[in-house]
Image (cartoon, rainbow, N blue to C red; front, top):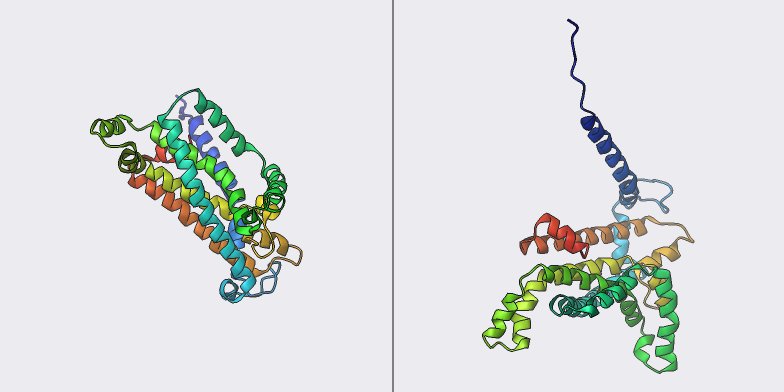
Length: 287
């Protein structure tokens, strides 16, 4: 009798091919980031040539006022925009979750429109509008560069926070708030003692996500920024004309680490609140 060898399951081969392909795709996506991190330790004048290993490029964050100011503008704008988006987005998310009706779907449609509108469209629309408010109407606050950047960065972030807060509260029992009302707690106390603590993990997650989104906002920033308030992405964009220097890669590496820490804090906050991995992904996606 001839030996009959068992055929290798096609599923196992397919899984292996899929795994190799996934690794190749991730390598293709993340290798440029790894390259720029390595280039941040270059002691040369430009990134195109490796002259040696050095920590000197990271010192530019402290030693060069132009770079330091650009980073501080980005950090300041990100924090204010995230706080602004967290407040408005939280109120909108709670309203959509606790006051359902036809208006919610119209409002979600408006938020979706804000989310999918190309940044270049927002930027082109914001610039003349802010100029009109600041110069024609005499509202001088809209001539301030930080105010302009905060307004521009908050548009998308408010929608994100609204999605996240609504997604969290929809899955929670509203009878807790009803019980508070049955115990004669006024609406404000119910909001502060019951509703807000229930939504707080999503609020913090939305705040941190808004902060990270603000850090890399380039298109809107390039249009609405004024002299003296140039954020870091716009500074990098303008530096391309003279060639990328190692200090730009070094500061970009620091900003990348800051973004990763913020995202890790988002996951940690949601995990501490008792959310599963699936719920964390759903909440961060605003689903």
